[in-house]
Length: 257
Length: 257
Image 1: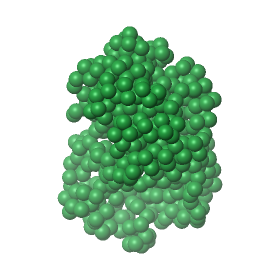
Image 2: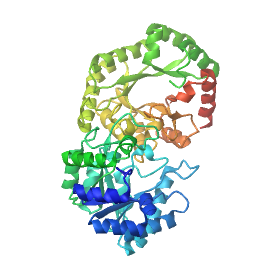
Image 3: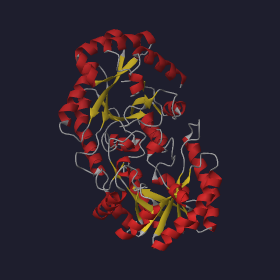
Image 4: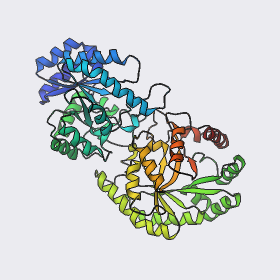
């Protein structure tokens, strides 16, 4: 998503050229290019598919079929991790605890299906500003409470700096998640203000915002996380620029932080 | 602030007409009208000044003089409560724990000055989306941790539904704060999406958003809170309308929730 302006074949070629060893894919461009075609493209280039984004939205109709399809797509693409953006309040509801319970139940329904196929479900807590409309799971503690009902190789969490940087309880939750082997993805983005309208596409290039990103990478290291580190920037300004230039800039920023 | 389009004399007259017994004042319009003049206006109308907004911004230069002045204004206006919006990261800093420590230290510096004048300091946790630029105190637990270093009649907290509604730990913090007599203000606003650019002026009229406001008022009742309930809406659409109409609508919405 950081360089969604690049068509998949060019994205894959540029990753190879720049020495980026893995790629987190989103379902929409994958489906557009074709799932089998994408799988072949990435496999032939020698890239790892780090995660597939995203399943979830458990508080909307049709979540079961949509999530089973997403799990099947993980298998086809050769990734072991499906990122879950769990959904906000159901239409017309103001009951946030009920939405959270419904999300936990849905993960329980999907976990065996995913486990049978070798896919891990990664519950991603989103920033509290998305609690109403995108994800009622707002803290890493909440995500862990859901994950801990299942074996760690079945259900874990996503640690995304953009969503968690403000939370003084996040570091201890990272340690707890790391010790249990439940950190299934680590994503970086920086925070800048003012936030844009809709607050979706203001994630800043690494090093240009207020998040102490080196402390976060140290925290994850200390927690024993050795998996891939993804950079996930939703940013209208970056998307309007030349994708290759943005990708090169992102590699430099990543190495610096 | 809900009807900042109304000049103070008209606001006071309309509060009297509508049976609103108290008013939370903001420093800017008060200073513009004159502090003594405002005090006389409100006193002669028989209104209580519930709070003065706001002191704080402890991570910026000049906070000591600014906050002493705000405390003096509380005395002049006859209110016992100064609301503190504590400030975000200092310029150029990415150290959120240090900002929080600095805020706690500043409250410690001000508390005796305020106590000598019969003014309570009310630490307001702001939604985490303001952590970088407005208030590094993001949860009621954090605000309480600061307040609990002082006697409850010196330092307490503000419970604002807009800032806290997403937090599954807030209800227990409300109970703890209520039992200790540390809830110095209770403010209502509703949450709607999409948020506007800058995320400052999107607080919705009561009952039109996703917050279960009746549950919050019950929660505060159960916690033993018997003080005033303020409605604090920052909303460009409401500000663009006729202030008296908005005030009447707000009274109706308040009584409904």
